[in-house]
Each structure stands twice: as C-alpha cells, then as structure tokens.
Amino acid sequence: MNTPVEGFSKLTKTQKIDWIATHCTKDPKKTKQLLQQYWNSDPRVQQLHDEFIENTVSNYYLPFAIAPNFLINGELYAIPMAIEESSVVAAASKAAKFWLERGGFKAEIIGTEKVGQVHFIYKGAKEKLSDFFAAAKPELLKSVASITKNMEKRGGGINNIELRDLSDTIEGYHQLHCTFETLDAMGANFINSCLEEFAKTLKEQALAFDAFTEEEKDIEVVMSILSNYVPNCLVKAEVSCPISELGNTDMPAKAFAEKFVQAVNIAKAEPYRAVTHNKGIMNGIDAVVLATGNDFRAVEAGVHAYASKTGHYSSLTHAKIEDGIFKFWIEVPLALGTVGGLTTLHPLVKLALEILQNPTAKELMQVVAVAGLAQNFAAVRSLVTTGIQKGHMKMHLLNMLNQLGATESEKQQLVTFFKDQTVTNAAVKEALEKIKSE
Ligand code: MEV
Image 1 (cartoon, rainbow, N blue to C red):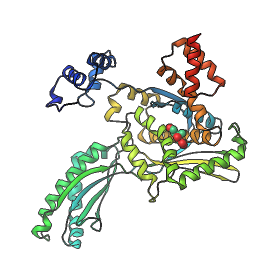
Image 2: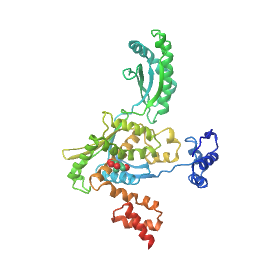
Image 3: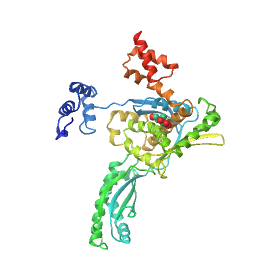
Image 4: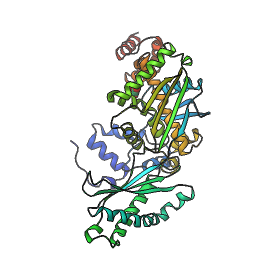
C-alpha cells in the first residue's frame, strides 16, 4: 500500500527515485534501472528535461516521425509527428501522396483572435456599471502598457475589452471579455498577465468611482484567465478534384465519392460517430501540435468545444460533390505558437520547426489543419472501402511481435509472411509459434 510522503519535491532526484521504487514498485532495483535507462546520456540535455516540470525522475519517450509529401498552398512540407499509435503516420503519408497528385491542399487563415476573461461579481445598478466601464476602459488599457509594449511594436496587443452581463446565469456575474492578437506566440503568459493587471485596475477604479455606493465599489473578482475556446482563431484547409480523378480508391470513383460524403454526413448528424471521426482528425492534429511543442490539451479542449458550437457535437470536416467536383474541408480553431515556451527550449521541437521551415504561427495553423484533414481522409477512405483493420493491423504487426518476444529474424520472416495474409492476434501468435517450433 502506498503511503503519504512529506516534502517529496525537496528530495534530490536520486531520493525521489528511491522513494518511488521502494514504495510503489515490486522490484525497486529494476525500477531504478529502467528510470535511468531513459535518461539522456548528455547531463545538460537531461537537466533541461528535468527542469521542464517538477519531480522529474526520467523521460517518457514517444516516437518522432515524419510524414512527407504534403503540398500546401504550393509549398512542399515534410510534417513531423510525435505519436504512439501505429498507422497514423503511414495514413498521413498515404493521404499526402494521394493529394500531391491532385493539386495538394489549400489552407487559409480565417482569424487569429485569442480570448481572455476577468470573471467578476457586481450586484449593483446595471446602468452605473456601464458608465463605470466606459470611464474605466482607457485606464484598463493604460495599466497594461508595459506588458503590451513589445507585442504592440510587432503589430499585436489587445484588440478589445468588452463588458459582458451574465447575471441571468449567476447572480451578479459579469465579465471583462478581452480579445488579443499574439502573433507568433501562443500567448498564454501574455494574456494572463494582462488579465491579472486588468483585474487589479478594475478593483482600483471601482473604489474611486464616485457614482458607486460603498457596496457597489466592492467588485469581487473571482478569477482572471485566458480561454482555450478560440472560435475566431480559425483555419480552413481543403482538398478538391474532379470525381473522375478519385481513382485508386479500391472502388469506382463515383461510388467512392458518394460513400465518402455519406460517411462525413453521418459524422455531422450523429455524436457517437462524430466523436470517433473527430478523434481520427485529432490523431493528425495532436501529433503535429506535440512535435512542435504546443499545448495539445488546450487545442483538444478548444477543438471539441468548437465541434459542439451549435449545441450539437458534430464533425469538424465537411464533404460535398458539386458539378462533378469532390470537395473535402475542415474548419478548426487552433491557438498555436512558434516562438516562446518549449519552441525555444526542447531540441526536438526546435528541429521539428526547422523541418517545417520555421513557420509563422499562421503557417503552422495551416500545416496542423492539413494534418487533421489528411488523417480524416485516410481514415474515412479506409472505412468506406477496405475497413480500418486491414491497414491498421499490418502497421501494428511489429508491436504484436515485440509483445510476443519475437527475435529480429522471426520478425523479418513474419512481416514477409503477413504481406498477403490477414493480420489478427491469433494468426500472429500461431505463425510465431510455428516458426519457433521449427
Ligand atoms: C483510430 O485512431 C481513428 C479512427 O477510428 C478514426 C475514424 O473512425 O474515423 C480510425
């Protein structure tokens, strides 16, 4: 049974490892070896990783892979992806190649607006709050001048501060709903610093506002924080081609196009399917977001909120056939950064950005949206033709063989054997046993 520990964060790394190994694992010696096995051989690199977070005891590896041949707005990209799921990178690469031969992907930025809010309670007269806000707004903006100075020099800063009355949901609940342009930065620290300053100034200004009663002056700020819901930080990516060019899809082109559109329509209509459909999109999006050092939890939260913006959880992609043209597109909110945070710290993140030709945040938004669209194309294409398992199990074969303890030569023999055989757990086990017994 695990026991509480006092002052764990104050222990040295070795002490932390000792504690976790002896208190939480059956074989402390093996645990220590395993944790150390994943340390970087260069102590400076290891220290860098140790210092990303707290209480670090080792590194957690994910594969870092490349999906090449993405033609986006006429530029060729090799897209770095960090993901554990077999068949995602293969599917992305296959979709990239397919669309490379059909004009590639087109992507456009619809907006780059970020959001943050100061949530506060004011239970006084409504007109007085509006008057107060009109008078306080210039002071609010002035109060963050030192924070916004550099961002403004580069063309960003605060877009607007709006007073919002939400007192019909919670008694007295109001917001300063603030919008920002953070350029190539994801902007979380910038936005949160501005918001905390706004909150302070809001309270100070309220205390000095003569028209308020003593009670009204006492505005209660509940919290100040950015929102990961960014419906106006939006990117669109699309592919299109004449139906006749949709050959090579394991079924006649017209039947394929119609079945594909039907599958997307099902995901638009029905939440159980929509969630899985969007999960497939996030396979592509998260992998690039993670490889480029961005916050995939923020992206996930914002994307799924966007998928339910009508009050009904729905597909992030859309497809149609019009005048013989098949068109497939995605619209997705992505608050990403290509400067600051991990982008300047993590060596592989820096490399991922270099592989992408050091994109601006807008360019990265386009690449990420395309990765999501490509992934969805590959998944839906498999689903409406061969089914998903054929390709997936083939890609998963090495994992299965590793789990079963196959040697290198056994792996080679079985990869060849399963080239034209159906891969299932039972079939792989049986084939491996057969080789071993020979
Ligand atoms: C698996 O990770 C993703 C899929 O389930 C997506 C989909 O069903 O569209 C294949």
